[in-house]
Amino acid sequence: QVQLVESGGGLVQAGGSLRLSCAASGRTFSTYAMGWFRQAPGKEREFVAGIRWTAGSTYYADSVKGRFTISRDNAKNTVYLQMNVLKPEDTAVYYCAARTTPWVVTTPREYDYWGQGTQVTVSS
Image (cartoon, rainbow, N blue to C red; front, side, top):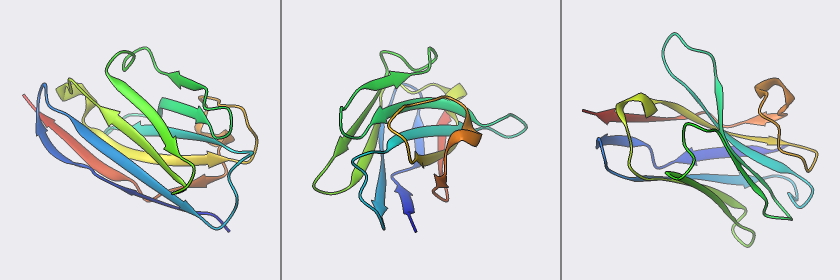
């Protein structure tokens, strides 16, 4: 069984930064792809960023390109999402997800494991 635990959310002013962490346990992740998603009230869950665990290839939604950076620490089994120049429209619950194949996809239902989510609120 895979466990994903997010941390690092909070309240920040527009233009500020936050770093989210996703600690993974329970399996080896060398053949996995990891993703960050977010869901704002009344909206569908949307893809934010993804990374292939072994290759390190990264992928981003257009709305966050140039502002967010996804990375991983193999030794710590942890994936990060560095969020800079935050905007009020980035406000959402952010979720970490893992899928048991190496390819990053943007569809939430293609992911096998999910964390509990962490709230990010950006004030204007």
